[in-house]
Amino acid sequence: MRIILVGCLISFALMLHGQDPLRFEREVNDLVAEDSSLNKRKLILFTGSSSIRFWKSLQTDLPKQNALNRGFGGSEMTDLLYFAETLIVPYKPKKIFIYEGDNDLNSGKSVEEILKTAEKLMTLIRSKLPKGSKVIFIAAKPSLARWKLKDQYLDFNKALKEWTEKQKV
Image (cartoon, rainbow, N blue to C red):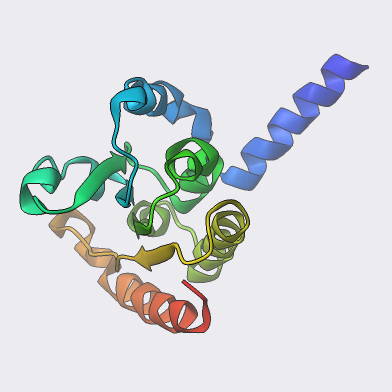
């Protein structure tokens, strides 16, 4: 009976997240593998999908900041929510820059779905991080390959701006 229940819970979790967030488990584990040597003091954390992940010059671009890149794969907002306890919470960053929404729109998620997940992420961040931690959501940009979704990106960014203005981020 317990095995069936666990299987049902896993299936239910996958339905909630859309795609299986565990597809990023190895990448996330690799990201945090050498964290013991990190300076976590006054940390500025960048996380989200590959637009952050491929920002290889982050520390060079922000030389006077203690910046850390924790972008992963082609993640969606649900993936970041799933891995927030691993990729955000332990660092107790003073600022968090989040880039998500791009892959969500491409996978067919609605603006409302993405913002609902962002709200859950903010609830988790508020409950686990020190008061005063700032969260900055970066607007999504369509690549040339996704230019057909330009209007959806514009709608998402407008809604994201309105949503963040109502938040205590």
